[in-house]
Length: 449
Image (cartoon, rainbow, N blue to C red; front, side, top):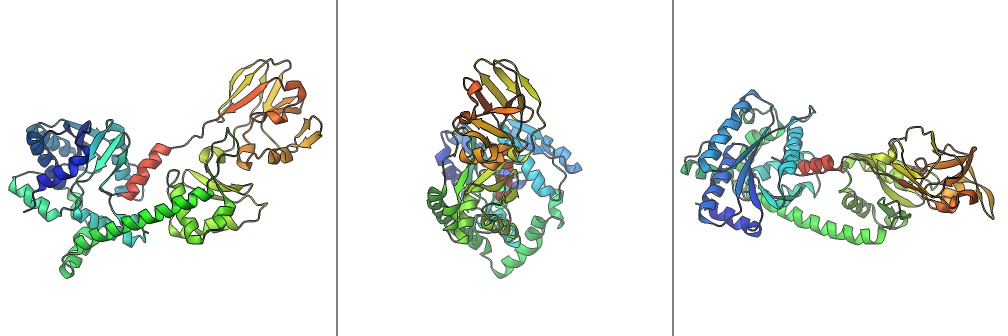
C-alpha cells in the first residue's frame, strides 16, 4: 500500500520553511485524509504551524451542518479552524461561481509565505481533462490542474494529484476517519458529476489505466505549453515597445512585428501577452483579431475583451483597460490659483506656477486650434499626431482655455501658449479596473475544486 504520509512529506520538502501550512478543508473524504495525514506528520516532523479553512457557500440546506463537523474534526486533531462564509453569484454556472468565491476567500485570508494545501487527486485530474476536452480546450487547458502555483501572498500546493480516490479511501478506512458526503455529488445535473458517475467508470472498464494515461497527457501538454511560452517570449522581445510617452505606461506592441509572424504565432504571442490583463477569448472570437489587424491604416478598429480592449493607434497595438473606454463626464472647471484639482472619473490635474488669468478646463470637442510660436495657429488633431499621443488618450487630456482660446494641454508642454509657458500642467490618472477579481477568475477557470 502506498504510504500516503511519506508521499505528502516528500511533496512538502520545498516548502518546509514556509511561515505556515493551511488545509482547504471541505470536510469531504479527500480533504479529511489530507488534514489527518498532515496532523500526524506534524507530530513526527518539524513542520510549519498547521491550520485549516472551511468555506461555507450556503448553496444547500445540508451544508449548514458542515462547519460544526469540520470544527469537531479539527478540535480532535488540535488544528485551528477558520470558517468563512462567501456569497456565490447567481450565474449560469453555479459550479464556476462557487469556485470563484472560494478562491477569492482563500486569497484574501492566505498569510504571507503560507502554503494552501488542496486535496485534488488523480481522479479529479482525469475528470478535469475530460471536461476540458468536451469544451474544445487547447494546450493550456489540457495541462490540467497544476501541482503548485502562486496565490496572493502565498502558494497553492496539491500533494495528492498522483494519488487515486481508491487509495485515499483505503487510507481513510484504515484510520477510521469520518467525513461528509455531499448530497449534490449524487446528481448528474452538473457536468463534472456526470463525467465522474457515468463516463469515467465506462472508460475505466475498457481502459483500466485511463487515469494514469490522462496524467501523462497533462504532463505532455505542460511541456508543450512551456515550449509555446518560450516561443512567445522570443516573439515578444521583437514586438514589445517602450511607452511612446513617459507618462503613459500602457502596454503596446509593434504592428509591423506582429504582421511578420504566422497567424498561429500571432495568436500564441497575444495569448501570452494578454494573460495578465484579461480572460482570453474562446476560439470562435479570434476572428476579431484578424479584423483588427487587417483594418485600413486610417481606421480605428477595436476588439472588446473582458475588462478592456485591444485597439490600434499609429501602428501600435495597445491593451487598454476599461478606464480608457469610458467617456469622461463633462467638465467645466475654472482655475484661478495653483493647486491640485479633482476631475470626475478622470484623476487629478496639478497646476504649478503663478496663474495670472483665470483658466477654464474642458475636454477636447474637435476643431480646436493652438497658437504655436513660430508656426502660427495649428489644428489640435494634427498637433496630437505630431506629439504621438494615442487616439484613446486624446478625449481625456484636460485642455486649458483663456477666453475660448486653448492655451495649454496637460502633459504636453510643447503646446503651451507663450503667456502660460511658466505654468506646469500635469494630469495624474489611474486606470481603474478589477484586476484582483480577474486574477481569481483566471485561476478558477484554470483549475477545479
